[in-house]
Length: 392
Ligand SMILES: Cc1ncc(COP(=O)(O)O)c(C=O)c1O
Figure (tube, rainbow, N blue to C red):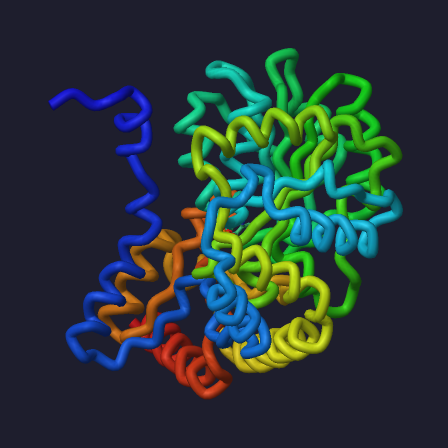
């Protein structure tokens, strides 16, 4: 049968990145004692009051179609939240609701890009962005980052990457996988520069609620004007609600109206009871989110403490997010081979850094989404593997 060009473009998928992880899950399903540190799905349960809220709304019949842009109650809760974290007040008519950040990104990109346009992104980038770029048939220019700068992108490198075909700069702060927080000054200068050039600045802030020593800096708070600014966020990570599929975009009203029409022909709105529970979560979340944030910070400190004692490797102590990147290049230059051999030898699954771009070749990613005992076991297995590899 016949398939579309889009289907074919998506066919060269990111399966290579997930090869070790997929094998680890297979082994686990066969009963092997695999430690899986290769995925970023929070292990915490969604807080009970949020679950109760969704159930009670389901029971009273909030199970019907919802407006394409989202329920007013949730759009208002998001607008209040964005107003709290940014210098610019946010109104509900700048907010649109999606089944997750990925869907929000795809909708926004679809409404501002044409095939052949250029998007500037930071290397390393989140693996989920590549298929969106492929689907829309746009080309990608990378801004390099370096360990010496803690993988924070530099303003001048954005200026160099921009061409007359650039229509969007896509940022991710705090970033997956390094946890890098883009400094306020870089965001500010970039926003000014892009506003002058008429380039959209889109920022994925899905890790915004998990920053450790320093606070999150929202693009909306760093920019002087918001005519070209889009902030995307959601509850997948912050509220351990990955499976609920809940995200939003905050964009100028004119773009939001286009986004509404996009949602009308694609998702046709999100479930009412999930939006009710999401609004409840945003209005009553501080205690739960703060607890989870503290737990991730303690896990980070535990893992970094263990890794600091392992010879031959370096690691990035993340300022935010739920991942630790480990530089294994002095043990094995090919991170994919390292990840495969580690799984075979020690039943520990990690993600090769090269899946995220050139900047992280020679690294592997460890997720912090497991209880401390499991992280300890994982780190011990990593240490044993490195000792054996070094002894060879
Ligand atoms: C940077 C980043 N953006 C988006 C997503 C996906 O978010 P969602 O599950 O809300 O689609 C992830 C998930 O790992 C991520 O790391």
